[in-house]
Length: 200
Ligand code: AMP
Picture 1 (cartoon, helix red, strand yellow):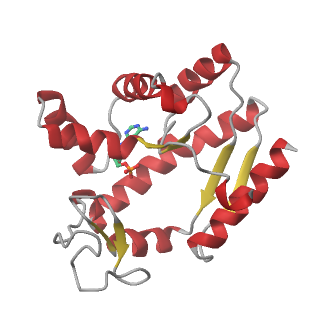
Picture 2 (spheres, helix red, strand yellow):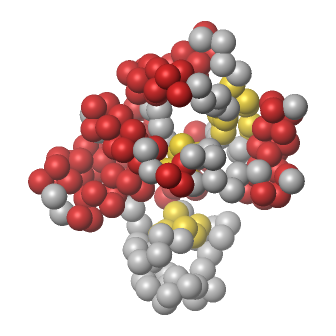
């Protein structure tokens, strides 16, 4: 059914790294420095973290990786991991105009308690700066400041864009979805439709 096509665990490497930082370990402080500057953290740390997560039983029937792989090293590591297990992946490229990305990220607010995301322009909370679910004061992510966003986009062009070519060159289909203008529900439906076609 189209409306439920993505009901598998959503694994965001950014969320996992932020959890580690909140846990306050020594490794977390190193991660924080990289993340606050807008650069990527080391491939070894991320590859290990993702492998550990994917060994958990809830991923047995599929999973969505958000923000991984983000470098050629991660892509090669992950492709080998998939091949060993005979898992078929679908690569979805959500293409968004850079100016729209900057506008979305500078307007993003998040609940520090439950993680719910808002946007001051397109999806504001009912009461200004307060989470609808638990009343916590919303926060701005440290790396959502404009100068850091520009660094993140730079890292994307240099390190992550080549990953798309890597998958294409290796014969994997990359589904292109224009995510600049449509509302999230429409983009969701487009992804579900493309995935249904892919598995038909
Ligand atoms: P995100 O929440 O996906 O925007 O990620 C926030 C930050 O976490 C990035 O700017 C990187 O510093 C770090 N990060 C997340 N995923 C990765 C990854 N796959 N490889 C390296 N760094 C990552």
